[in-house]
Amino acid sequence: MLTASAYETVKETIRATPRTWLVTGAAGFIGSNLLETLLSLNQRVIGLDNFATGHRQNLQAALDDAGQSHGWIRRSRSDLESLYCFIEGDIRNPETCRQAMTWQSGSRSLPVDYVLHQAALGSVPRSIEDPIATNQANIDGFLNMLVAARDAKVRRFVTPRAVPPMAITPDCPRSRTRSASHCHPMPSPST
Ligand SMILES: NC(=O)c1ccc[n+]([C@@H]2O[C@H](COP(=O)([O-])OP(=O)(O)OC[C@H]3O[C@@H](n4cnc5c(N)ncnc54)[C@H](O)[C@@H]3O)[C@@H](O)[C@H]2O)c1
Image (cartoon, rainbow, N blue to C red; front, side, top):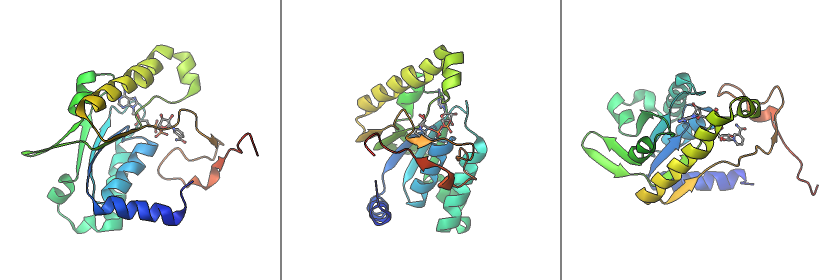
């Protein structure tokens, strides 16, 4: 587990070297928080989402929160656009995944350095109800992203653990507006 001081050190390291990041599932819970944090660290971020379960207001909240904590409210729209772009697209489409590996802003074009892959269809009941749709997004889409990232020679591809190591209670946050204090790490089998 990362301590608070180690987390601050990581953030300072990231802030010191602006890179280009692709966040899939950017309109979801984790993706929008990643978007906010990366923008607040002055990173270039491409967000990708098809809004299957994500929300446009999560994107707006991420931009607003990054702006408030880092003075973007006083920055011009073009400053904001120089760091962020959004692709409304579907990872089930290999061509969309391929295109998302390049940052485009005006005449400027940069390869993606890091992929944070959060796009997925959650919910075990949904996967039982419609296993084909879940498989297409979570397996085929994931593979499309891996192939596109490999072909684009990205530095790192990061994806979450499939099974949340959290006890999901009715109070556990699933939206940006609720605190994470209601979630409790599950005890490991050895404790
Ligand atoms: N939230 C947690 O506590 C938790 C814990 C461990 C692992 N995870 C995993 O992390 C990932 C993200 O979790 P989350 O809570 O942010 O989920 P979420 O449902 O809030 O976000 C997923 C996002 O992916 C998008 N998406 C779905 N299918 C897509 C497709 N075909 N193309 C493009 N975008 C698509 C959705 O619209 C949504 O915005 C999931 O894989 C989840 O299983 C989550």
